[in-house]
Image 1 (tube, rainbow, N blue to C red):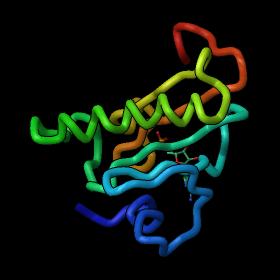
Image 2 (image 1 turned 180 degrees about the vertical axis):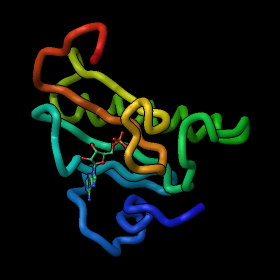
Image 3 (image 1 turned 135 degrees about the vertical axis):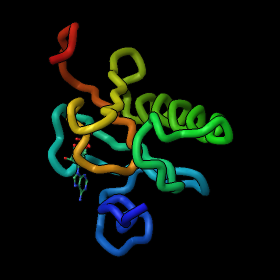
Length: 113
Ligand code: AMP
């Protein structure tokens, strides 16, 4: 796949406010936050969209969700946060490297817009 902005963040070619990193994933603050806490959790493996994930990615996908919960807790928002994955342009995806949005610190409406 073509290199995205997020590959450059993983490779430390462009800066990011990193809140967590391990062998499988990276989590950093969104540059245009939509809530007081807005973190993106991304796999280091360049999966473009969630629909492109394969059976062999099952453990990796679970890892992203587990880390999202841990980061929410670590930031003091364990009782109220939202996780969001946009898949495809029509759903608002702008960077084609899978990412989980972790949002917290404000009220959220349902259904989402
Ligand atoms: P999406 O629209 O779901 O593809 O989300 C992409 C997100 O990446 C948006 O919320 C952007 O604000 C965020 N973003 C774009 N460039 C950067 C960057 N350099 N550092 C951190 N977040 C970014």
